[in-house]
Image (cartoon, rainbow, N blue to C red):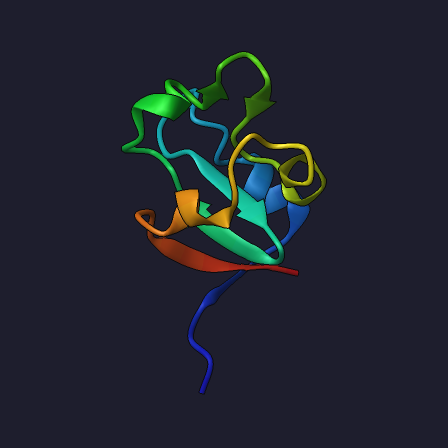
Amino acid sequence: MDDKKKFTSEELAGYGGEDGDSYVAVNGKVYDVSDSDMWEDGDHFGEHKAGEDLTEAMENAPHGMEVFDDFPEVGELE
């Protein structure tokens, strides 16, 4: 049984970090980046906002998916 939370894009947008948790989606997985100094108040260096699907942005990122290894996977993007 798959017990991971399923997020719609609208639900994910509610985790933009302004008032609490910062979640981002990449390749269908949703990660909690709230504890990262790189995502202060849901902002990633003025380039990206939490609460979004960053799959396309990762194609041009200066890093790979390994940056998400230390963040909890909290669900899946529908």
